[in-house]
Length: 202
Image 1 (tube, rainbow, N blue to C red):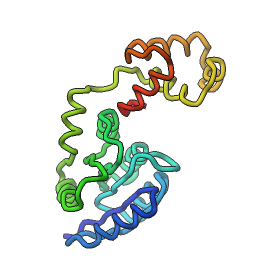
Image 2 (image 1 turned 120 degrees about the horizontal axis):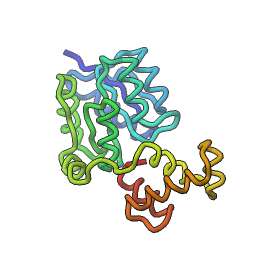
Image 3 (image 1 turned 60 degrees about the vertical axis):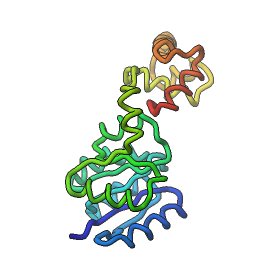
């Protein structure tokens, strides 16, 4: 049985090398490779691969959003996230998005091949060290609205700007930021953003 693979990765050199290595594996066929998250969804609809290997940080939409869209549009395609960012929060988010695997880019190609076959057969494949870290870290303590406000705060200078863009009152924004800072043990908004981002919660 041939396992048909789609590869979505915005770094052209890495994508080309990965496609070439995967094509050397017995029973693997790389049917498409793309450089954007939104292109990954369309390519899955067009090629119907068994496995979609997605990076997280890509233009268009990120790999987590692409995984959600693929799960809806092409439920027969199983998603494996392949990323540089070994953050527990990303693992939680990937599994919630429907991914069946979460591996780091420094995974040896032989181990990646084993994981692809495992997922294609209906199993799951998660980097062991990251799985342990995710269990010990737990899920994000932030509510969806706190996450939204804190994420938006990365690109805004003032509370007024943030409130306007989120269509909330300044007082509501302050309350959400204050709650997020308290939950994260942060002294400032910037520190709260850094902590949440480092854990993969934004």
